[in-house]
Amino acid sequence: MLRSVTLTGLVQEEILRRIKTGELQAGAKLNENDLAEHLQTSRSPIREAFRALEEAGLLRMEKNRGVFIREISDTEAAELYQVRAGFDEMAGRLLAPRITDAQLQELRAMLDQLEASSSKGGVNHYFPLNIGFHDRLVEMAGNATLHGIYRQLVNRMHLLRRRGFSAAGSSQASHGEHRLILEALATRDPDAAAQAMRQHVLSGYQRAFSVRSADEAVAG
Amino acid sequence: MLRSVTLTGLVQEEILRRIKTGELQAGAKLNENDLAEHLQTSRSPIREAFRALEEAGLLRMEKNRGVFIREISDTEAAELYQVRAGFDEMAGRLLAPRITDAQLQELRAMLDQLEASSSKGGVNHYFPLNIGFHDRLVEMAGNATLHGIYRQLVNRMHLLRRRGFSAAGSSQASHGEHRLILEALATRDPDAAAQAMRQHVLSGYQRAFSVRSADEAVAG
DNA sequence: CCGTATTTGTCCGTATGTATG
DNA sequence: ACATACATACGGACAAATACG
Image (cartoon, rainbow over all chains, first blue to last red):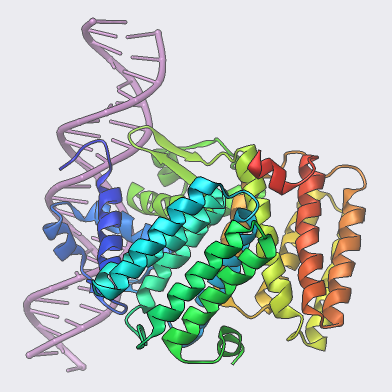
């Protein structure tokens, strides 16, 4: 039992990890006693971690009934993509004028790895790399608050993975869009970068959900 | 001690209320025992509420040292405005094509009340009305996820109120921008509404902090 | 519908770490 | 540096609510 960090924090990270790996899926019930036993703690840190994750939009606590991994409706899924498109657009606009050559190099290297992974390894390799690429893009935008909220959004999107994910040649299209983003950033054109990043998110939504647009799914 | 709702939830709302009213200001220390005594509970619900509010970005918990209302640096303040500008822009773009005449009427009534309050009552009346107006705008945009994250942002901005707030004729300028937003919405022009809402946030930042732009303050 | 088992919500005690004289 | 006082982190117990047979 490590000191120096709180048990609550460790429990919180552990649950988040299980959500990211898919070990915990939407709708699953979390039992306080079981978790406390498996993680070798009392129930107090477990409950505190629950409260934090509830606030982060990952858990739903029903009084006297239990704690569940949140389920994301189709409408909310469309909302998430719509908001994330806005965030990526913001990030692209902020990043384009300030990106360094070294950063462009770093992003290119990440894309090389990503494309290699998509042919070799399965989704379990590709998925975290893809998320890491986009996370790094937003981080480079230089707004820590934006980055923090973006991460919260991405965490929520883990709850809707494994839906219509990974149609046949979808990764090919995604790679092309990634390269478009890098090209726009390389020219330091804010509007082009913003547009490329926004469009990539919206295209990803269409690939995953096979609907026309996030706008219509929300308005629907 | 009410039943039917959790004590944790009540404590959380109470602390949030104290932050919004300014009763709790940035840097203030929260004592578990004192709070538990005043709110007539044990320390457990207090601690759970702390964890939720920490995740929301309002509190900072230092292990074995205490819990404090978060302090927002100048850089983070600029970041908050920059992100909020992006949100309002999104909201305006989404709302313009879908706003109803009844909703326009409702917003006009809110502005009438807001302008009346700015001449009569003090900041304590004006401030919540102003926040309510913007909150309603985002709510009308029809994306509940966007609205939820927006509220989290606004909550954080309470931590930096009472800085350079309310220069002389600043409310007059604000009123003008509000009317511009309504005009743009009335014409159902997405770009105009997005731009009007974005600009209003950025102008508000300049009025409150007397600097040229949020971009420069972040890039600084 | 009732009784039992299980789980949660809350309370309180104790150990540990921090601040202060 | 030491001892004291204090606040927090965690653990465990009890009561209430829910689930189940």
